Structures are given as structure tokens and as C-alpha cells.
Length: 185
Image 1 (cartoon, rainbow, N blue to C red):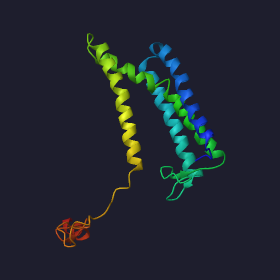
Image 2 (image 1 turned 90 degrees about the horizontal axis):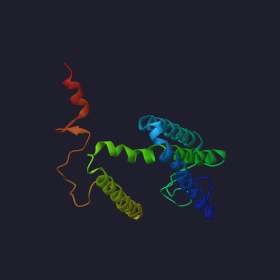
Image 3 (image 1 turned 45 degrees about the horizontal axis):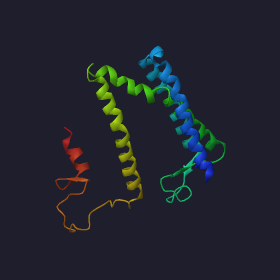
Image 4 (image 1 turned 90 degrees about the vertical axis):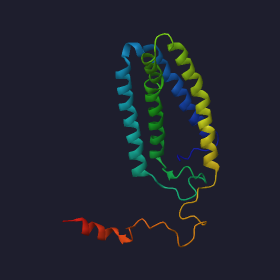
């Protein structure tokens, strides 16, 4: 999207992961002083800001990349070049820097007050232990689905031309426009 290819793509992704890890540390140390609610509200406002900035940049400076996508990657269907592409990357990094100290770790601490005192540790451990394999399964399924051929849309070839289904534009054999005029007093 921003003209990043090869090893540079790996570097840009690695920067995002480093930002995520480094920015998580302050929340782990200070979330009890800040409080959960203010932390979540500030995080939501910051993340919204960076998403709106990205949307504005993509809408004003980007364009449709065509049916084959960017560099034949169909999943990348929108292309932005020049300085705007660097701003999109910066906003993405800032989004991660806003998420990591707020919603990332604080969402785990919200679970504790909801659980009973005796089973709190066990429930938290089960939650964390189940999260990783479920995220892995979700990622594998998403990757397989993105490689599968597109689903067929439209009428099925197994139905005959004289199907019992009515077109969407009619009701009981009458056009919708006639229904609207007959319904008025």
C-alpha cells in the first residue's frame, strides 16, 4: 500500500510489534493509579482519533486498486501513495501505541471484579489459557478462508427456471409500488 515490499515490509511489521510490547509496560505498572475507566475512555478517544485520521487519508488520497488489488494482493483493495501513505502508517502505529497501554491490558483486569473470590485465579487462568489457542484457530481459519475460492452468489444452478421463489421486487405477484399506493387511505 505504501510502496513497502520485501524486507521493508517485515521491518514495518516488527516496528508495530515493538511499539505494542513497549507501550504495554506503563499500563501494567500504573493502571491501578490511573483507574480502569479513565484509561479505557482515554484509549477509546485516542484510537478513534487515529482511525478517523486513517479513514480521512484513505478517502481523500487513496483510490481503488482494481480487482487484482495492490501488487496482485486481492485483500489490499485500496491504494494510497506518496506522503499520505506514510501518514497512514504513522496513524496505524499511533493506534497501536494507544491500544497497548489502554484497552490491551486493562481489558484483562476488568474480568477480575466480575468473578467470585475463590475461583478468581482459576477462572482468570482458564481465560488466558483458552485465549491463545482460540486466537490461533481463528487466525488459521481466516487464512484458509482468504485462500478459498469465492462463494457463488446469485441463483443456484440446481433450481429450475420455474422456481417457486418470487422476485424481491414483488409481493403476492404485485409490484411493491402498487402495494404502497393501495395502503394509503
